[in-house]
Image 1 (cartoon, helix red, strand yellow):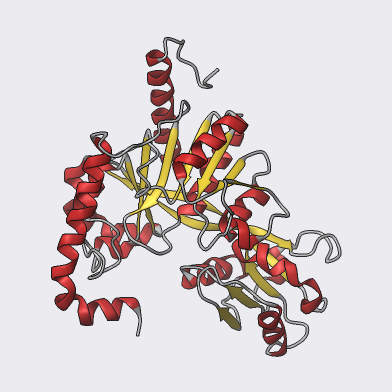
Image 2 (cartoon, rainbow, N blue to C red; image 1 turned 180 degrees about the horizontal axis):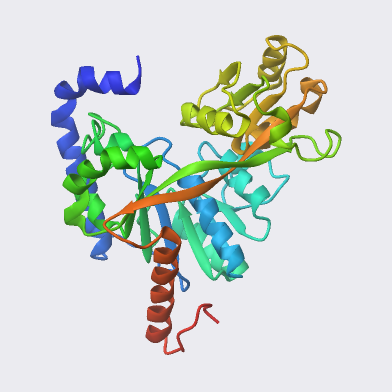
Length: 375
């Protein structure tokens, strides 16, 4: 039984429990906003990337886009992450390539590989992680990955991700009646909404978006995951990066352990011209073992290439011998923004302007001169 079918079956019975849960989360937000619960405000701008519902909505890809933005602008960025199922220890963990995925979490480790100039920190206590990042790295910008409900760190820009389901059947269905982590009032904290959807899907949902979100007076941007190429999992032994055109329309297998496996399959098919002949679909954040890899190898014809996501690659690379020289390629993607609602600005333009406004305000409050960088 899928989560949505479970909600449909049990939702009416559980609705009395969802209302008090939403109320508790609303009171919690009010207590943080009023200073009744302690929160930490870093000296540099803080951008939260989070969602109203649990599950995959594109938080980490959007965080990666922001890290690429910081790289382009020569801003030193630090990412604070819980790291799903991560075991960083009793102190904040500075995540670098080579740190075990079990300690760092797969997504923080993926970001550390992709953005070596950024500082990735994993720790459940975000306020302590923020203090650690400031003391050790003096960042120009802090990103809270999956930060919407982590109110112990004050944020200057609050980006709230939505899924198409959040505007449709899941609208305001709070745990345990649905996947929402907070009630409808929490959306008022958003600086902008970002919907992971193709342009055609946004067109279909635009009327509903006006109905649901117009009163919040915030822009709604859309994005999709665009494939940018393939790279060898074991470089350089498997040679140079693959030209996707050489493999276009040829058979391949896909392995993934993500929140939206159908989305990964769509992205791979867009790059390679056809869906995979076999998709080994593991649970999100699956802790791969050598047994898993050997099982996949046994079920595949020997010459068939295997494609995995960058998130899975940081774990699958540990089992080099088990792959037994099989061609394994990593699907590289990036967030690609599409149409928007309630604004004519692009996401890039909106974010650049919003961040400049935050920097100017912080500089004026501290008696300094407004500038892009904090120094």
